[in-house]
Length: 511
Image (cartoon, rainbow, N blue to C red; front, side):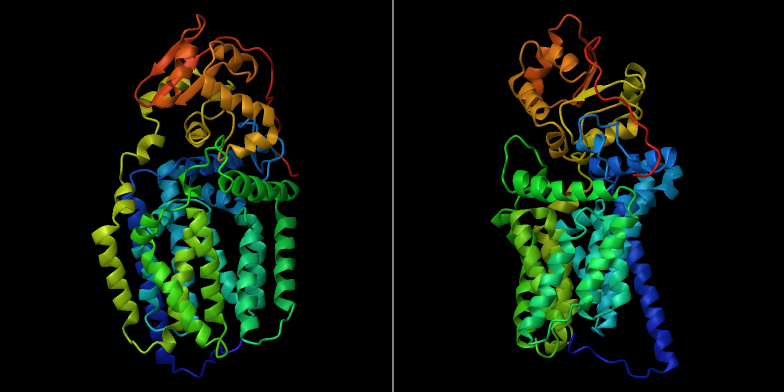
């Protein structure tokens, strides 16, 4: 891409100083991310428990080709591990236990984002690269997402490396990132496609000629990554389901029968002004400056356009803010060479931090809020449920959002669906509809329906008030025993079941 700076000869003392500075900043990033992870008393959401549980299943059973532990999910017999490398990364830390293993993986993933951003800024010879790198962490809503030990940590780092290597024609790096994407994240071609579109649009406005070599490199890398994946065919199916059904139909289509979780909700105007005013301002500023200098170097405009694309996606679904914020910071950092303000980075860092600590501390407070502990299964609860619900039992659940905790604390039992209710709908739309209306309508024969239609003897649920009619419908059945009932959890034994659905399949081998 035009405008790339050439590196002149640098004395050895200067090289050593640069290496030392990079090591110091790397240590700072590591300490900050470690502090953030240890600041959390428990991983933020149930998805982390699911990912750790999958890693344990891989460690014990080998590569998974089906997932019988969620009987009514599309993943039951069409398993595609959309975060394969992420799950493998947990395995070396298994002996640390769930909480500390999650911290270790979170430290690696978070540090990788910061080191990647810092490295790109150093390669572009941006002043105060370390301070620019810290700037996203002053956005409290981004810091909250950053603290979640989930696969997006590695996707953010891959996206930054992809955008830079594609723009600067670093073919080997581009190939490596493209290979890693299908092995690491579900949106393995959608995110690269957005970044390619931003880069090619920037080049077009700069009157640069299109050359297909980068695009061919990306296609080759993604194809290699898919071929290397142990569940390659099912991976493509899961990818398509997540784009068309999870995101477009259910999240963006606002299907009331699908509770997709808060991360799919759009932010309100008030939330934008409170939490994303600074990155939005940086993105707009960077877009203005990069447009005026696009013929000198199209990379800043490519990054600004990428930030704009993810900003628009964030306006529709807040989960995209984890890409929007670092891209906005990177875009402004790249155009800072054309802004006559030597101390721009420290000034922005101070202003953003002061603003956050003054009016936007909510997400930081949430990191230690009791609300997070709603996923925690207390030892006495785990002990009771493990005693009453035998290994191999089939369990009915009233939601999908705590299946990860069940897989973690009560392994060897067979639940309904994890991660996303859409996966149950895609497997059996009629069964999903029956599940939805059973919980909503709470018919008098609810226990019989659970026994026969869902072939489940046990019901485990969180104690949500809107489900009390359903709980009461179960409790009036003479055969039902209430084994546990507290402010947080309920456990019912319904007695013998009817049919014999959800048989356990072989979990070894390759697909």
